[in-house]
Length: 358
Image (cartoon, rainbow, N blue to C red; front, side, top):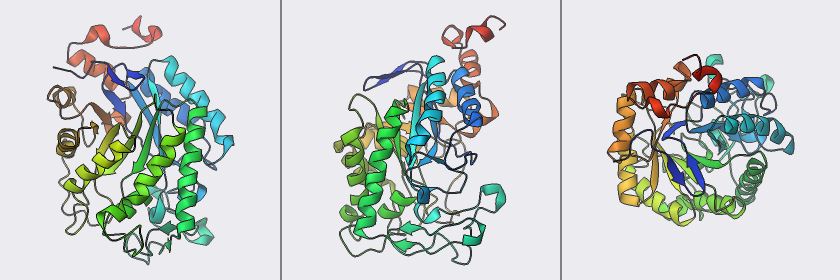
């Protein structure tokens, strides 16, 4: 049986264990630029022993930022600071990954601790785009986006392609497409937010078209030797919305387009969260079902906190990797502590400067 501290090979990339750091927005960039905060934030978790470090949602164009302080990779100027961070991550034994994103109708927002709703133009906000002109929530708090034209769709797909090229130049070895959480791609495939009547709306096949075309555009420039992954919201948790069965079928099609692993999240395409069963490991069944029914590797997310819990997910083949978010903020050295608890001390990776003391 595999266990949490087994290495994991995907394409030509080998993770030293099955522990990944999930992308978490830090809202700490100016004009999309990475800085010393990001070096310390991501670098500490590499030093702490995780096998994979995925940088936060990184916008492929300025309009695709959630907030004005989001990370970006729409310009060549973003490459050098990211390369510096990735060099440090690799020096400490982890694999650097990036999540490419476009926020769609949830863009132009205040940071969570500043209100978490749309910014007005006078507050530094901007016009947003989406498959349909439907606000994320109450249109007194959220902008009504402009419905995307075919030209808009082509431009955004070109932006994803260009961002993938820059990601490679910046030294990333793992690329994730953010197709979840109510952002642009999710708002295409969910019937709750896509009311189009052209070839990008209506039927299941039409609603997933944007994702498949975007994936194909990225796969053209992202080397086949490196993992290409996608994060899905596997259920909208709303009647009449996207379902796990839809996600299984989409995962099969993404695999054909060259996706190697599905990062299985859910929800957040609306503010209706009453049906979401928040709790320990609440999204693991999505990972397990997609892995078994779509024959594709998966990553498990969602309130994974204890080493025994994480190890059980891997041992019982419910996912191929586990991705930690909040727990890694509480403890950047979670992997090291997990190795101690699971009696895998001999493979707990720490830099020699720390290990000699401990």
